[in-house]
Image (cartoon, rainbow, N blue to C red; front, side, top):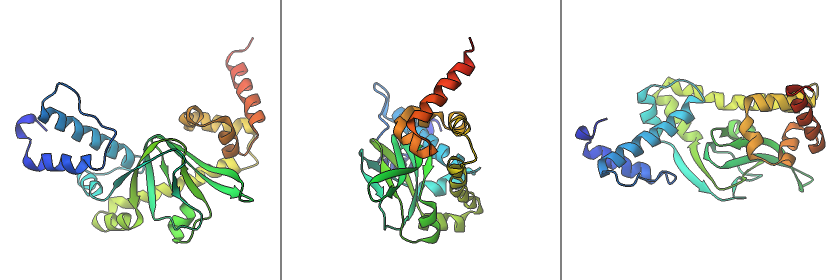
Length: 234
């Protein structure tokens, strides 16, 4: 898009987008039209990144998706899903971090999923069956989420078969099952996380990572030392 062909509907489109996005700030000392173009590029990049995590989509598909998602801004400890609520939406973490857990004896949080920026999160069982959730999803820190509701997903599928690819959002549960598999050694579990999601290790504290991997914090410390030793043999 060039500055010369910027149209009234483009400006209205930006006004619509800016109601959704807060993390973008206009670049200082630029013209209004340049700032508008920068913002359109920024927003489209974030939407593209979210959708591309689930498959391949056309420009037409992206235009459809833009009409259906919404942005949620949450603070540390804010609840996204509570026990007993039905999961109506899937969430893509734009910034910050959230996590999913179940309660053990209504006291201890047993981590089921850790989601830093760039990852989708949802309660698969409740989302698919549309029954009350047995788990919780909570913000670990101040976060911004892209939310797409189940109703919107059904609507999008009706408009374009490409959105059947959103079913891949449910595949993450199968990947998490690796960490619950007792046949895997602590080293194998940690190495899988290190290879596939190193940002989790950078974002969350040791205790939460240990709960997620179903091993103790002390075991993680030993595994880390072993990995370092293997990289730097004496």
